[in-house]
Image (cartoon, rainbow, N blue to C red; front, side):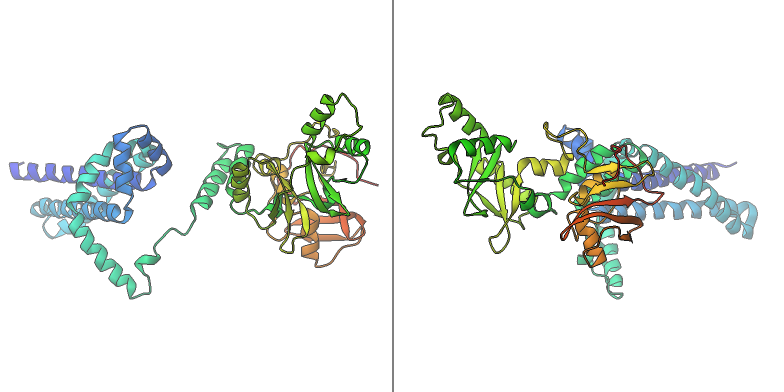
Length: 436
């Protein structure tokens, strides 16, 4: 074997190593975790900073790596053909084609890409320096190729300015969390909390407020003793007081301040003007986003607001705790009875649900996927889908779930039975007998 042949074989081997470098680098730098690299950069990792800088222009990076990979693969195949031509003559082309296809596939494509997938972050950090050098050297050629590609795509109506991300960052995070939950690496509670934070920019105050029919308010014109007793019986930190009409809220009493004043007076009610302790009510529109309401609470150093519609009519109240419940899930009050659940599982696998139960709470507690865009409560969802106010004992089927109306008061559905599809997940919710 002469020296020239040995040099050609060595050159082919080197080109295959370079090809493997390009293939693995492309896979690793494309699939690398941007969040992980950002975190490492903040901790002072210089290689992570290079990865972030290189992947900021993925089109140029991929173009340079593909260009280098294509060039060395073609060059290696040409050299292999030249090596085999002296020995096999006209059959060298066919032999070189099959042989180089197998070698390139295994050693320059599958092997390095498999390694890059198995050790993505580590691979990217190790090759980024050399990859950055190749990208810089090939930048002029890649720029020319990109210009030509976009001109050709423009002939088919594809514009460069339309090449942005199809998925918003919030939805990308939500999808990643859902995927990790499906794979078992993220607990359902953690998934729900992260989803609750992301939902703050999509939900309005109306989605989380306490409706006016569930509000506890006190008439301002009661005697001091009656007013004091009613405020304590409310079992809430803040209690709205009204005058002339329950919707005419004239102030909000802080129960702690009332009790403190009562203690300082040593229980003497004579001359005790409780109404003077009430603060000015703060009204917010029901269309306010929860994210904006949190900022407003922080700015005003407040935790309580009354909700009105576009006509100024009282709709309910919103507290900071209500917003936190949207993130962390519903926390029962200390004075709630143990069996006061709004979702009660039955032995047959169905659930007895209060009509006022929010759809989001059902989805969170039972890991269901009922739509919550058209209605806030489960009763509202049934009415929306049925396009009527159902009578007791009527049955419906929506989204694979079966709904039976158990109880109705006037125009309000107060209790219903929901039977999920067999493939739907179940949760260990409290078991109780159906209402009479």
